[in-house]
Image 1 (cartoon, helix red, strand yellow):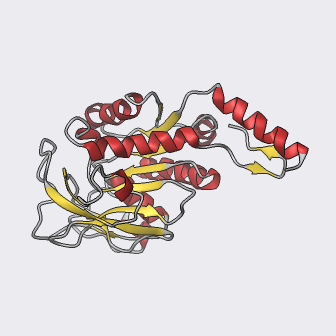
Image 2: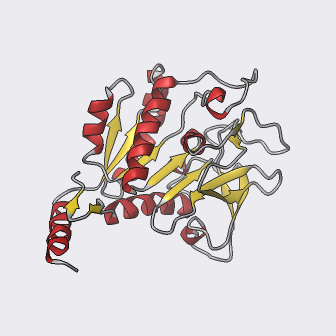
Length: 267
């Protein structure tokens, strides 16, 4: 390795060693503060329990202000929302059951995803956050699920239905018992992934109806995981839920800004 590259690597390591791990989390909605107050704290608590700092991204900030915040973050967590992605974004006509969209949340999600993919920062999508990720990658959604499985039994249900996890996947590596790849999860979603986005692969399905329950990026060097259930609500009861957040924070802690030539991309 050339001297300049060695010095750049040393500078990068020194910079990161003095920084706490910071996870960007967009506020779930723009126009429903009671919903935000009810749903955001569990996401914040999940990363802070692991020693990371949750950087809440308000949806009314300018692009420049968001870019400034992202300069000091090491990963992204896209939370759920009571709003749906606008069907026009994936080339579909709106169906009556589709909820209204939240344009501000969509715009912020896209800024965070662009930053994360440009710099290979880890990403965790949860429920609507997973749907947002999938559409941003060019995928589409089922606008309203009509299956034999109740995917929306309520917030307090800890084990709503099982998911079957694909062996050899990043998600499978988070299961305590490698022989138990069918896991119970909670569930609160009326939409799901239909066409899988570019570079994403299906890594968990609901076995009774085939609904896609988790996707991840097909890239060993970039942690991107999206799940349809809500691990932030079941961290006490579920080892898998805890492991999902541990994986995000661990990937953020290990992340380093890329070197272009002999220059470190500053954060």
